[in-house]
Image (cartoon, rainbow, N blue to C red; front, side, top):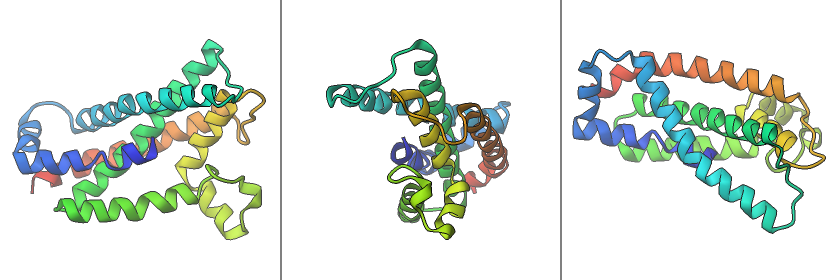
Length: 187
């Protein structure tokens, strides 16, 4: 989900080059609605990847939870996480003017987000300075919520409701910033 979403902003660069962004900007649609739509679009695309990971986990013998509430939680967390990273990507696309710069910055942002989260190893095993960064990383809360709701016996370190609430706040904050920056894409 992170890797798909973080490069979602490249479509904004293409849309700017093709003149589509200018058409969006002259419409009466609120900028926040445009940004939210793009974020949800990235989330929908990420659901296909999440379904494949779910299927792969089952094929590998991982004890996965199939209860409806947990599956809905996974879907919502994937949508929200993808929306966060797609919106971050859109913010980057609003600030840079070329595809090459965007791709370079996207690479520079992706790996630290991934390695400074609990996706690979638990936060307890991290050095203190990395723990601080991990607690500020949205991917940490996405992974925590997914582990707590997907894996049989998996526990959420922070609580799934806390994870979801925090992710919702981060998404709203990033959408507000992206909505303010979106008109800059056309310049």
